[in-house]
Image (cartoon, rainbow, N blue to C red; front, top):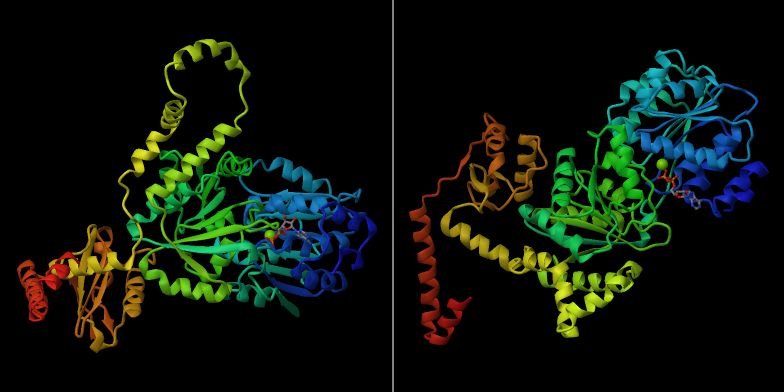
Length: 572
Ligand code: ADP
Ligand code: MG
């Protein structure tokens, strides 16, 4: 559907043409004609990057009466970034309207200009809930004349704890207004909100939610939880031109990963809710200008940020909700370009990756973590390309005779090697003896034998005994679920799990030892009192067991009485 088939004024159409929009996106096709004709409520579900702003923005600009100098539409959005982006978009749609005023109001910046703008007779207000409520309380902003309310990214606003503010704001608006709720997901909280505030409404949903992600390839790397950061480094190193967002689950993770990357000499910075508004703006403008290659962010902080040419999205941790993965990966592969979405996973996340594959209807390809050698080669070629593409600085001309003199005795080949070494030595030595980070099957087997041999957990991990086993009906996934539930912490990486008949063992990083022990205190599972303790398999006993097994194996091979076989068995 083309924009010129819409019942809109020529000046609005002209502005849209200026933006080079040709066809309506699917959500726009469903929303815009409906909103232009009707004054009924609407719930629209579509992922990031599907053109939701224009879906409500164009009808709003169309419906505003520019002769009336009071607020007729208010758009609420979760962050200042989004708020600014929406008002910028609305200004673009209305650029051929003479008497239209659009005001963005958000926290963390001077309130006076915002007050002035509202008082000058604004018709459209775009705001974050906190500041909007503040301006209502100051009696500056009056919503009695509002005809349209938009809740943009409603799920995120509720996630961020704006429920009370939203209640307060909505209660100031007339009951016969039109309410539009835009959301990427429809959790219960959003459902409740719509039941409370919306009347007869239509729900539209863009059928294939991953439509924007057609240009995205999905990869995953399987590593030990403790190798996550090193794997991230390698992924960045093998992609010297990377321009991407690294998603972490918590603010703390975000900060840690960004700090480490910066320390290790990467062009990175963090974006999360603990930063002040001006810090956030600063980070964002550096990222937009590509002074930063890697933005480490939480989902909330990155929500709605609209940057078209990202090469990669990296999931440092997988999100709790699989749907969030869809939004993350939709950040890349935009505007006709190819993008790559990467998951750094640990071995217990295979099931989750399968579930995500089903959801996105695309395969997520397993990749090997790049080896030191792979990286060195790529980086070296990148360096050479940089050298070749660098414009010659004519200032150097004056020193040429002296330089030539110094280089006289060195052969061209050696000179090249020496020049490259200057830049390259650090990386080379870093990766010289770098180990393989892949948790391949072989590695797993080795560890299993190891821990059976000693009854001792992997380094950095504690091994726990629990009195639930196969016979009490527990399986690996129940046990992981139980651990998450008892500790109320889904970020605890569960290491090796051994389910036995009557009991089981599991390994958890040492730092969570107390959380586990206290989490399971006085706990009953299906009426059985659960007992969890640090495993104390006596070393002696288990090493005897191991020796036994070894003997048995020798015996077995010996029975075949071939020295060659025995030798082979030893080499294994
Ligand atoms: P969402 O709010 O769903 O995340 P946006 O409204 O921010 O998405 O739009 C994402 C991008 O798509 C923006 O750069 C916007 O200018 C562009 N866009 C929106 N509608 C169209 C269209 N009909 N044709 C081309 N580009 C569009
Ligand atoms: Mg949006």
